[in-house]
Length: 161
Image 1 (cartoon, rainbow, N blue to C red):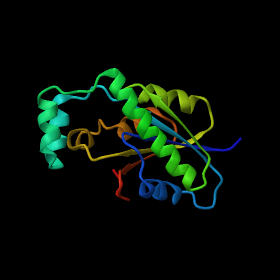
Image 2 (spheres, one colour; image 1 turned 180 degrees about the vertical axis):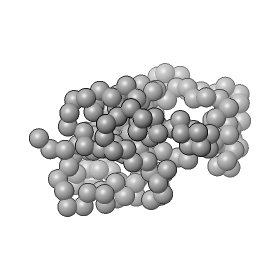
Image 3 (spheres, rainbow, N blue to C red; image 1 turned 30 degrees about the vertical axis):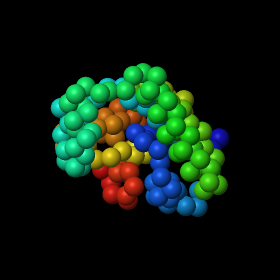
Image 4 (tube, rainbow, N blue to C red; image 1 turned 180 degrees about the horizontal axis):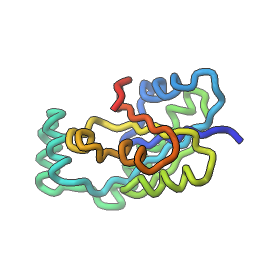
């Protein structure tokens, strides 16, 4: 059985993100499984603070006005992000599968780890001021619950979260 690296991401992985993930296991044969949540809701205050901390004024206004995606819009967006991420791994010559999951990724992570072939989890997100500071981000929550190593990378960089 080949070890699997579970990759949880909130957006499409860029070729740079994939490069950073592949660099973690350069000489090993591992498979990748990408999970993308269909995000339909976030904490309103946390979302606005995140948007403002990143200088994204339009996104902050959209959140303040309650412009969250519908379930079907969120599923379509997640599917597009998943397809792009899988294509980036495939372009790098790696074996990869993927799945769109529910808003809260922890149940899907628990189930994947319980299946037995997951060696570690890599979480790729943008910085989230509130969640990261108070350790309520996906990676921190996964570290508390899962019995495998969890790495948190910020999208588009090699910076660890």
